[in-house]
Length: 398
Image (cartoon, rainbow, N blue to C red; front, side):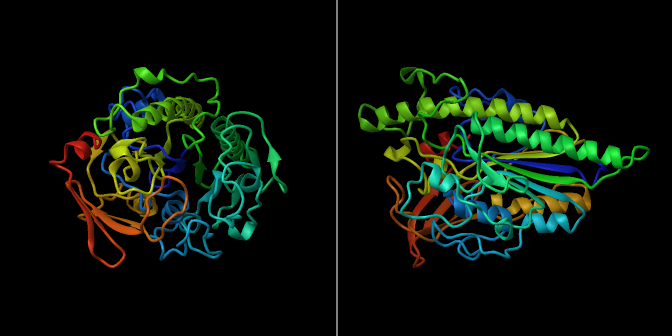
């Protein structure tokens, strides 16, 4: 599906709450991820990649714009991405790409008084001017409906229900759209089927909670059989809760891996593929849950980049999701994925997200391969991690 070595088709697969440790290729014995393991075996694996912010809206804004919060306009959890913001869709469109988006947006106006899980946010309409420059857009604002999502967009004027596991629905509709682009080009120019290359972003909510939601027929593993990280306190409420949540978490990981595998099979081998997540989840590490905390489980994310014609590689660049847009344009223009020369990646949490179990303070941080430093808003030091010598942090890096 590619038109030339330096203008490949590009597919971004972006998940939610999938921490870097939770894959088979990262050594997690609980994780059943054969599709991603196969991708990792031939891709560039950025083992030190971090989110620019450990909450979804802020991280998505940074991912699309290449600008950290609050400078990108998203300071508070309920802030929309400002209309008119320049994004990777604009950058690639100017380079001749057809652009498309499928799935969770989480960057438009939401009602703070409405339940986070449910149809209110799932059926909120994102207007065309707020879709960040994508030519084709089909998705939903949020709502965390891992099953039976509501979609609207370019071809769906009103929110429309779709039956099935959300990741399956979105990956299937993405694959259909991509096939249509190839077919359309061949019909228009049957002797020389030339077309624009495409950039497509697929945004999935899983494996975000509710972890008890059905996972496309995948059975949750036994809680007692799960292997817990050493930094999860044993013998009390934290262990009990961690085992219960992780059982559902790993079921959704397996189900989402299957959906991704089918999508990758549909697009073929000539596509530049990125797989990542906007943040992780503590799952009892250090006795904490959810995200927002400045620990590896919350801030370090998987990042695989498969480049057609290139071999597998492990990189320890100080890379953040905020760097992805520049990586894409660099590859298009130079035929090679640029290395991130920065000594450290920056992470920002400019405001407290007042939801249960979340971090109770705003902070900024810098993370290198060996060190992570966290600062309070006034610039004073809060936490300092020596990643080479801290057994808890080190164990959960690899």
